[in-house]
Image (cartoon, rainbow, N blue to C red; front, side):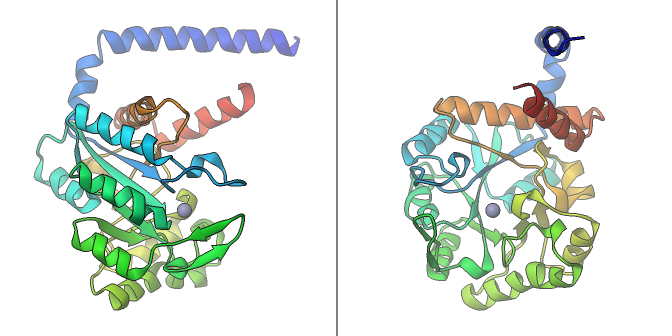
Length: 298
Ligand SMILES: [Zn+2]
């Protein structure tokens, strides 16, 4: 069979599945899906809130005006924007958490302080900032100037209701590094941030979402850690925070030039992945399958 015939067949199958899924979603399971959203909190991941510098991958940056469009979308749709620790308390209390969302920012770029932080305050929203221990306060000249937030800046954000967490010491993917380096990557930021800022952090976001059993075991040794973000898309529910607090769900929101549509799509992705996960379809498997299909056929 020629490659075109094969592609045609695969596309036809996907179209049929899509059409059925659409019909089912509109009719039978719509109510069930809406009920799911009442006990599920998506977490969205940003990096730099800036115009993309030359040589930077576009997915690392969301322009300030686009980010503000995202915040306006959340305001217009009555979203409650909380810290991760607040979200965990809400989930454990069993309240209706429909229209609750967590906004997270990785890597600790200085624009998180100078641009994202004032915008979040303007809308009365909370943000969560996961910073790399060795980079705090540093400026590097690599593919252009990269500047990272300083401890006094992080302290100020914390005082004003933002949550600060760890993104490890070195930013190396945790599943790839030698196990004897894990305590340094995981334990060290706890002490370092406490020493420099005077408060204990409670969360860690895994660089590239990478983790394994040894990583989870290391985190569990340190009682200050309440949660960790994996790279698995979906939503955070009571089940996730109770059974897998160190594998919380999170998905990236990227600037694809569609303004508020980009955050709307990212939220929908979280809800659909989370809903399917609750119905027994593992989010990791679904994510891998979709990535494979995308890479193979698009
Ligand atoms: Zn990162």
